[in-house]
Image (tube, rainbow, N blue to C red; front, top):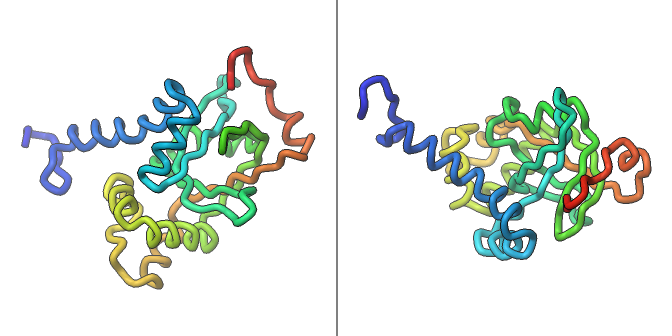
Amino acid sequence: MVSGVSSRNGLDSRLVGGLRSMLFHLPLTVDRVAGWHLQRWLTRLIGVDWIVLETIGRRSGRPHTVVVDVVGSDAAGRIFYVQPADGRRAAWVHNVVARPNIWVRVDGRRVPARVRDATGAEGAAVVLRFLRAHPWYGRVVVWFVGYVRDIGRPDDTLLRDLVSTPVFAIEIDERSSSVASSLPSPRRGQR
């Protein structure tokens, strides 16, 4: 280990940071380069869905795109739950707190949506179901993100720890003209 560089589970922190950055940027790279069809194939391969959020910068007013894991959804496919990897420090979180009306791309469609904070009992239940349904992927995410120590504990214990984990609900509203009208129109060439 290099002097002054901390180690996590015996690995150099720079290696972990680089690997984390690469893995978290992979979905956005796939979305930008290959589009929806490859993204669909990859989500089937790893068993976890992604959703593309198109936010508006809280200071710049410019559009920003981020791809995040879907940790849960309702049966009708109108609400998607996401968990920010960088917690409340994530730029997209600051953007949606300031401007909760956004565009999302899901299943090859681009639709207006509204974001709300689902942190607490609602979000904890969603994340627990996700971790139990995707134990391998859940272990990788927990290792990188560090919201909880270990997902192998009993549900009631894990649920208590997950209550403070940031979770956001993306509520699709294709019919709402109020959401759509508060969003900037797509730029030329933007999907």
